[in-house]
Each structure stands twice: as C-alpha cells, then as structure tokens.
Image 1: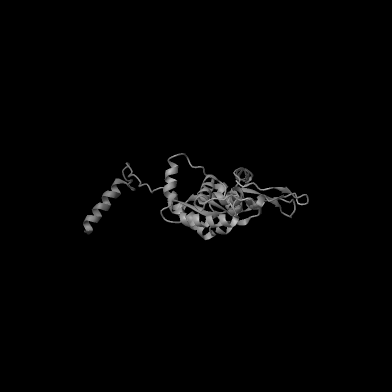
Image 2: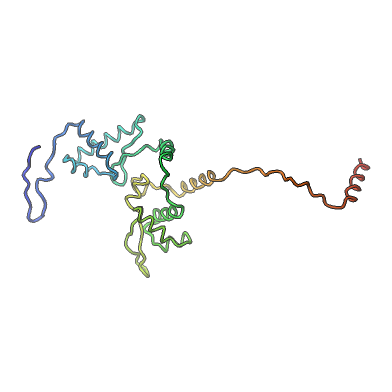
Amino acid sequence: MEHTEVQLDAETDLFEGAATVTIELPDEQLRAVVEAVIYVTDEPLTADQIATALQQPAAKIGRVLEELAAEYNKSEHGLTIREVAGGYKMSTKPEHHEAIRAFVKNLKPPLKLSLPALETLALIAYKQPITAPEVMEVRGVQGAGVLKTLIDRKLIATAGRKAVLGKPILYKTTKEFLVQFGLKDLSELPTLKEFEELGRLSIVDEEPPAVAEEPSAEPPVVTGSNDEVVAERAESSVTE
C-alpha cells in the first residue's frame, strides 16, 4: 500500500490527506468486495460509508452499486440490492416472499407484533409526530405498554415535545421501522385504501368455515291435543 503523509490542521482539527488515500483494486475485485460488504451488514449502507471504509472514490462506489443493483434485478436472482432508508441493503425479492415465509415458518415460530402494537405503529407512521394522548384518543384505550414495546424494538422514538399544555412527548417512526418494512422512505407507505383492502382480505381469511347443524335427535313437537290432530286429518281426507 502506498503511504501518505498525514498532517493535523490546528484550526480545523481535521486530518489532511486522510480522505485522499485510495487503494487500487481491479474492477471485478472491487465489485465483489462491495457485494460482500452489503451482504454481511444488517444496516443499509450509503455509497459514502462504503467508499470511506474501502478507501475508494464515492463516485466509483456509486457506479458499482448501480451495476450490482441492475445485476440482482434479473429474474435468475432470488436476492435484490435496493435503496432502503437512504442506503443500500440486500434482501429477498417480494415475488418470493410467500415461499420464503412458508420455509421460515418451518424453522422457528415467527416473531409478530400484537394487534394493539400494529394499530399504534400504524397511527404513528401516518400521523407522526403524534403524542400518546392523541393515539389514545383514536384507539380509545391506554397504550403506555404498547408504546414501550415499540420503543424497545426500536420501531419508534421520541421526537421532542408538543407545544401545548403539559408538553406531551411526541413520537415518530425510526430508521429501523423503514428497514423492517423494507421502505425507502415514508412516501412508500401503503395508502389507507390499500390498508382497508388488506384488512378485508385478512378478515375473510380468518373467518372459520361454517359448520353444518346436526339434525336434532328429538322428535318434532306437535302442538294441540291428539283429538285435534285426528280431526284435522279427517277433514283433510274429506276435502280431497
């Protein structure tokens, strides 16, 4: 590796020359390294982060990322490299989610959010920043425990306080929320109409099949006395 002299700027406290250090890598090797870096990292990585770590020009890393994204977009790949939450992340393709979900279910029980947690998270996602009293007003129940669960899972975070009486805490979704739901940003959230359609489909799927009623073992109840029944039958035979 070529050694570069590093000097400390007393006024700016920055290391001059640190950003100019580069390592010459063949294009194929650089592409393979970038691919591996994205694969082993859980968090989305920006081009600048990768460029700094690999000591490469950011423009060159950006071009490599575009090439990798185009390559993985081909149908023969089950994985994709796409921009999520401001960075690049490797994940499975949406068209294979059902098959992968069925496979994963056989490995271990899926980790799910409760219905109250999902309702609260949806409210915060669409109305953020929003306070706990505002969430409670919509849902009609106390939600302190649910908020704590969402905070513990790093799906939401505090966003200051609202300038009203009492100054309640505001909540917003996090970068982890975007990562978990595979969103580039909040503009990719489904519309409320799409949510309603998903809700209707979920209700249909969860409805238990109708159970046919078993015939009663008891004989039918005949109202009236035996004399009345005999008289009705006699009258019927006469009219016929």
